Amino acid sequence: MSDDAYSDKTIITEPPTDMVPATQAPAPATVQETPVAPAASPSSETSQSAAGNKEALDSKRMSLLAHLGELRTRLRNAAIAFLLAMIGSFVLVQRYFDWLTRPVRKGMKDAGHDVNFYAKSLTEPFWVYMKLAIIGGLIIAGPFVFWELWRFVAPGLYRKERRLTMLITGSTALCFAGGAVFAYAFLCEPAAYYLTRMLTSFSGDLPFRLDPMIMMDEVANFQMLTLAGCGLAFELPVVLSIFGWIGLVSSRGMFRFNRYAIVLAVVLGGVLTPSTDPFTQCLLAGPIFLLYNISILVVWLIERARRRRDEALDRGEPVAST
Image 1 (cartoon, rainbow, N blue to C red):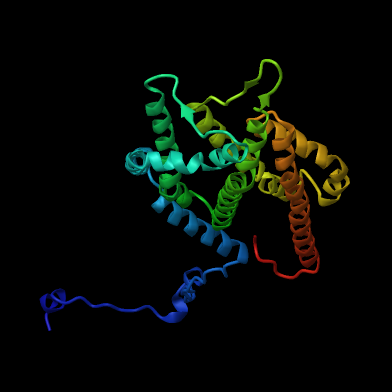
Image 2 (cartoon, rainbow, N blue to C red):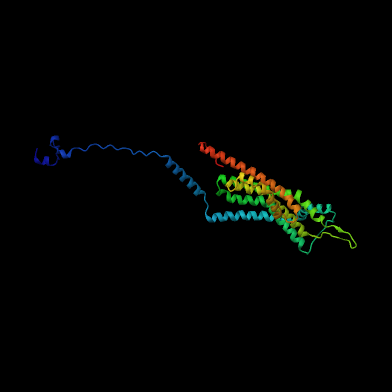
C-alpha cells in the first residue's frame, strides 16, 4: 500500500502497561455516601413544636386596627342593648318605684303613720324615674354587656385564666344579688319601722305630733343605697377568697382574728348602710360576721387543695393545672 493510504488513517497504539510511570497509577474508585440526617433530639422537637405554636398564634393575631374595630363593635352592641333596656325600664318605671318603696311603706304603716311621699320640685319625679330607669337598664342589659366584653377579652386569655375569670365574675354577681335580696327582705322594712317609730305624739298642755314628710328622691336614694351597701358587704367571701388564693391571708390567721371580726362587722355595717341608727348597723353586722366565718372555710379549702397539689408534685405524680 502507498504512503497516502496510511496518511488517511489514524493509528492509535497503547503503550505497554509496564511502561506507564508509577506516578500515573489509576486513581482508586470513589464511593459516594448518602448523607444521613442526624437524629432529632427531644429539645429540638420541643423547639420545633414551640415554633409551630408561635406560628399558629401569629396567624391568629389581629392588627391594632382590627382590635380597635372589634372593640368598637362590642361597645356599640353593648350601648344599643343598654339604651333599649333603659327605654323599656322607663316605660315600667312607676312599677319599679312601687316595688322599690314597698318595704318603707310597710314599715311606716306598722309604725302608725300615713304613707305619703312628696316632691319638692316639679322636675323631681322625672329625675327620680330617670335614675331608676338607668339602674334598671344596667341590671337588665348587664349580662349582655358582659357577654360582649367577654367575647372581646376571652380570645387573649388562656383556658385557666378564662375559667378563673368566669368563676370570680359569677361569684361576685351571685354574692351582690344575695346581699340586695337580703336587704330588701329583712333589712329595709325593720329599718323604716324603727326610724319612723321615733315620730310620736307629745302630750301636755300644748300637745303636738311629729309627722314624717319624706321626699320622693330621699326614699328612692335610701332604698338604693341600702341595697347596694348590703350587696357590697356580701362580697366579703369573694374578696377574702382571692386574698387567700394569692397568699395574702391564711385560714389560721383569719381564725385568730375572729374575736375582732364582730367589731369590724359593726363598723362595716355603719359604713355601708345609709342610715346612722345602730339598729340597722346591727342588722347588717350579723350577716357580715357570718360571711367572715364562711370565708375562713373557703380559704381553708383553697389551702388544702394547694397542699395536696404540692405533695403530688413532690411524689412525681402528674397534676392537672388549675
